[in-house]
Length: 227
Ligand code: ADP
Ligand code: MG
Image (cartoon, rainbow, N blue to C red; front, side):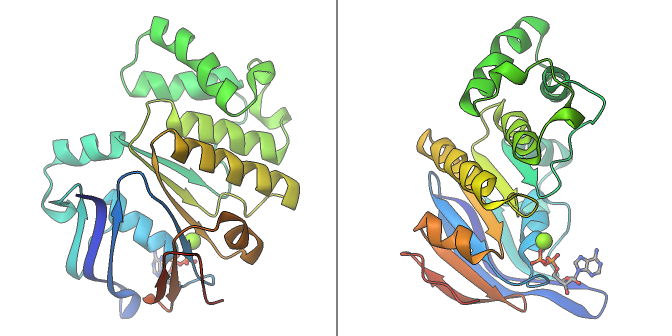
């Protein structure tokens, strides 16, 4: 069964259509890239998946369940199983790397022992164990994004949404972030990556869905895209 599916989904902001008649299915374990220029509807698709926005028509499903019909509890559970990372990292600047991750874990109900155990483990995954006591504002952009990734995957989400995660990074750090996302995918997490960066798409060589003005213009299993 697909982990995420869109069936003729349409979303308006006021009179403007942001997403139009979008249909696709993503299977558990896949790595899918959403490509499109700024304003093509990538972030809106993520908001629809997270249930932060509702469709005007059509259906968006998570694990076969209509997200618009979820109870509050179901929606929380779905979000709990979904990690999210953004272009601007969104870390707490005056907190340490450890605190940034432990804070998120506390919110999810983990106890101190589990936190002490898991934080070093996720930091290993992003190769940042040595920065555990650094303040996040002292880190480079690439390092900050790796902390944000560690925070997003610490509860082993089924699904990871990455919204332009390389948008503020130079090519070397962007490459590293992509490699980490690929590695997370290999460990079993479904990854949906949104980008408008051709260099990033070319590197991935997996299924690409191209959005043009909110519509799916191409859905290619081998990575062809239109930009
Ligand atoms: P992308 O992430 O590909 O840049 P978005 O999904 O953010 O695209 O935006 C798609 C369209 O919806 C754009 O025309 C954008 O201006 C519009 N839009 C996005 N968010 C809002 C909002 N909160 N209110 C009004 N219009 C919005
Ligand atoms: Mg966006």
